Image (cartoon, rainbow, N blue to C red; front, side):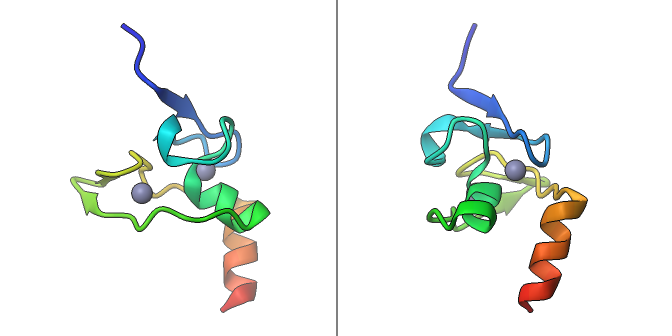
Length: 69
Ligand SMILES: [Zn+2]
Ligand SMILES: [Zn+2]
């Protein structure tokens, strides 16, 4: 049973492939690293209902985010 779910190379979270422009990165990481359109996450039970991202961030992504604020 294979769904269109990928594992993000950067944060290790599962994500819905159709929600991201990149097959190896969730929408969040693809957005931060490459400027692709992010998902407008809708969290329910700790998981985005749209892209399935679980809100994980790698240290690298965290640093980038903190520096942007
Ligand atoms: Zn990710
Ligand atoms: Zn999302």
